[in-house]
Image 1 (cartoon, one colour):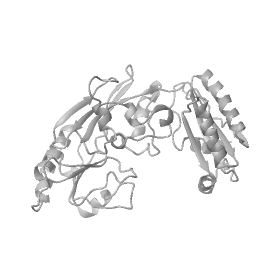
Image 2: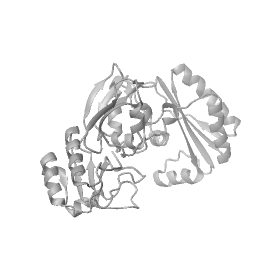
Image 3: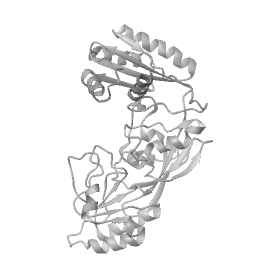
Image 4: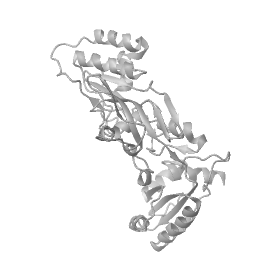
Length: 357
């Protein structure tokens, strides 16, 4: 998960007995669940924003909601601040410890607790990796839409704390649009449930309030997610332009035409050459000032019609060339639906396509 939560009591001016706290933590999560050696604590001194570093006093790794509650109560009793952390991939400094703090790491809370395909929902612990959710349901033709670029390593708990998005949020929304309910541990250690297993629960939208609160309201220990049926058909277009302005106008015109792509990404000349210098795909024209990668998904007849319209709009805005890489598909070779490619969705697809050609 991520970011600072404060204990309900005021910080004490007394010297903190960290050995006593560590012993109490060990009674809850076992000795193997407490990290206190200085060289081991260095691993947790920052998240993906490595410019800022602060070593925590202690790190604890719970496995259950009850353990998280017990740990938070200990922090509350000793009046020490705690920060929740998941995979530590965030770039906002959300999982950055402060001096003399406890880091509660949810990485061992990595179980998918329930899969309910009939009602299109999944219940997970916060340490479950984003992409694991799709892997768990893709065989039945479903997927989990929020797809940050770090989806193969970031945790759902951190996504909830930061309200993560991804390239497909243009059409399908960010994390808050796909979270139905939460089990929470509050800063005093008490446990509450908000939301539920259906959308639009009566009463205040406490789930929406919590998602994106960056850990300041508590720690989510169980998360009920909404999953979607995989699109019947997916096309990806690559168009290159002589100016960034022309590519930008094409984006505006596509949206103005009432077409909402599954994803849309622009690369300028610097980005194009950076990719080519690293992976040497020979797929991207190095002299293009900008390229657009546009993903169209939906029903096959809808995708076919919108693909033609998007191509026409790009040409009207001066696209030099337009390619439809052969990654159009309605299903996987096994006949089961698969999730749309994510960031760098079309880049990776093009790399694979070009290398196989």
